[in-house]
Image (cartoon, rainbow, N blue to C red; front, side):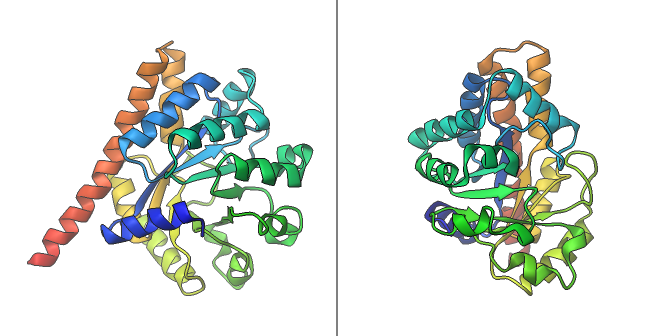
Length: 282
């Protein structure tokens, strides 16, 4: 596990809580706004950031994140531009884990080795590549093992059978549990099913398990973060950016709206932790 990820999970464990991760697309709605939004996320108390690398055909993403990718691409964002944003982020925020999330096609066109070199140089801590199953590990997973970046696996509700150990064999960093069967931002997560899935995953792997997809409210984030090792919120954040863009709000206003929302998530997770501690006293 990368040192920044390890430190983030260790800090959360010491505080008896899960981590909060936030997904945003690089360059949404433009590069300047994207950088300001990332700064605001750090100020709001998030533990980890997933930076989406925009792609024109994001098959796992729902309407909100698809639209975010298209806004970013329309504003001129490229994979190289996404790495430049990551680099600027790392220069200002040396301790916050940054995960690059996206699809293989742009990486293939960029070149696997140059991408891995440039992503590591930009300060990325890990990769989540949605459309590469373990059968295709030779494409990116195995080459990435020569870098200092983690290769994070997605586990879905349909992966929890005999295939689970195979999928997790070469995973590192943490395990991203996709709480719903479907695309992002279209359904709500069911707490009981998440708890059961996390328990089964932890029987196979010692890696932290972080849950994403279908998390929209502070209450959901707090509860889900307490079930495993953390929660990741994406579509709800991206929708705030979309609404702000549609209203022609300034970069500063957009960043503040996002920051206010993510702070409410971070506060809820901390409060949930405090309530658990109080409960244990009685």
